[in-house]
Amino acid sequence: MRKIHLLDKATISKIAAGEIIEDPASVVKELLENAIDAKATTITIEIRGNIGDYIKISDNGTGISREDIDYAILHHSTSKLNSQEDIYSIHTLGFRGEALASICHVSKMQIITRTEQDESAMRVFVEEGSIVKREETAGEIGTSILVKNLFYNTPVRKKYLKSDTREFGKILDLVNKISLGTKDISIRLNRDGKNILMKNANLSPINRIYTVLGREIAENLIPISYETENYTLEGFISNNKLFRSTRSNQYLFINGRSVRNIEIAKEIEKAYHTLIPLSRYPVFILDIKLDPILVDVNIHPKKNEVKLSNESGILGSIYPHVARVLNPKRDIASFIEEKEEIKPLTVFEIYDEKNIDKNTENFSETKIDFEKTPYEGIINSDRDYNYFSKVAENEKSYDYTLHDAYKDFEEVESENPSQRKFEKIQGSNFVGILFKTYILMENVADDIVYLIDQHAAHERVLFEKFRESFENEKVASQLLLMPQTLELNPKEMSAVMSNMNFLKRLGFELEDFGSDKILIRQVPIVFDSPARANFIRDIIENLDEIETSYDSNLYKIMKKACKAAVKAGDTLSEREVFSLLGLLKECEVPFTCPHGRPTVIELSRNDLEKIFLRQI
Ligand SMILES: Nc1ncnc2c1ncn2[C@@H]1O[C@H](COP(=O)(O)OP(=O)(O)OP(=O)(O)O)[C@@H](O)[C@H]1O
Ligand SMILES: [Mg+2]
Image (cartoon, rainbow, N blue to C red; front, side, top):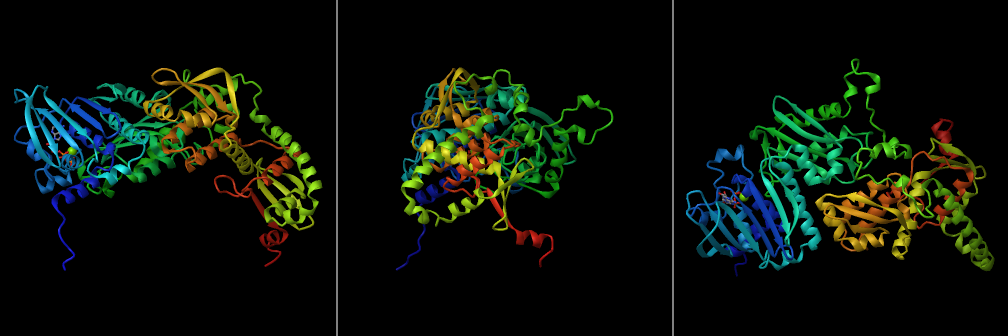
């Protein structure tokens, strides 16, 4: 019997649709791009109910003529390419002639459209890829496409959609990108009757950024613009006070298309090396224009990745330009007066308490000045180690009774190799601290020296302590005597609103404080560190990744929190060193920090002799 047969048309269409329409955000993307290609100046996106139930995008563009409407929903039918050569120089966002065909195979679609030549509008109802009904209706020039019941006939795909929050987050991200990249178009995103984003046309670039990404970002950007033989670049890059824990605030547009290009991102990031902390990413919004012949957008069905030809020269030239804008003193010397120099802060200076005010002084309204916030019985970050010593003292007396009562178990206890090693470290002589970072201990009896990275060790201790209190629902919180407001952009706001409970468990007490602000009433004690305001933002940035409170992403956040709580450059006393070691010993995973770096390194006399070539 023959086993191989052709699939029927409906199945082929559904499979093809899956390539392009993988989630509700891809519907929004495709319809928005069509509206932009149709020269619309006003676009409204309306989302109702569960994401995917009702997505409507209306524009005042050219409309689709009556002759064209039947073709618009067919596969491989487009008005945007006329010949094979056109594919090599694409000026429109669409060109495959696939989007409407794909959407209408996995949803119920209605199109209302009217061109300049039409007396009235026409409405068509599309199901399973075919027009099932058409009628005359009232309507302005332009097009309005309503997509209902997305994936109703592909239940598996529907099942794999993420939570509404997450899917809406993706839509918001996408609308943000398109809003940032379009100058002369007004864009409004409305969810269940509430306007989430409203961007007017003809705003100045920085005002556009302010509307979409909020004040904190807008206030910390530096303009950049230059032209080479092959391309022009215009836009903004962050100064060294603005950085994020992910690349999600890096916006790149090539010929008006929002694209991802990791190579360009890395070239830009290179210029921030040592200016911002490790594992942090600069923010940028850049618009590159070049001859379309030098970019290939046809490498992925979703069109959001582009391949740059070598001739474009972008990769070779972007770094020096960004570096020069970031630090003009680097190559212009004599005629700038010394006192005018704006010296970028180094990583350590950023984390240095003294610079915190300086770092945030520009955001007069958004600034959260935790330094000056009166706390009730707060554990000051400077006092962290003292706090640990107290805990250690308590534990010591507890340990003592334990030893007495269970003497017989002592041997079994010390069978644990990590405990044994700790006993050795604790029994060593404290020699000193190198570079204000590495604790040096000498064990004369065993001919061994130990180097302990005090920051990594501190991070590990904090991490386990915080994790434990979170798991037992006992995160200690501190009521702020003066609640602080934090200004958020629409995306951050929506993430906070849908994760209130989770944030509460994490020790925050927050309140909606009007359209773009939240009020912070209570903060977890573990966040008591100079960089705290930034780390609240870090958490917010990671919120849409969290599905349940037990998700591993939670630990990602905690790791960040703990990192924030550890400062570079603290000098510990001998007593503090031993109390830190005592706490580290109690940790479940004492020999690595939460990021996987070692906390303790062991060097034997042998190793040293090898280094000094006393031994071969
Ligand atoms: N909002 C709109 N206003 C005017 N014409 C539209 C609109 N949406 C779609 N069209 C017309 O329908 C055609 C098919 O749209 P569709 O999105 O399927 O393909 P495309 O935009 O040409 O290519 P791609 O699949 O890459 O998006 C378009 O080429 C365009 O002529
Ligand atoms: Mg299209």
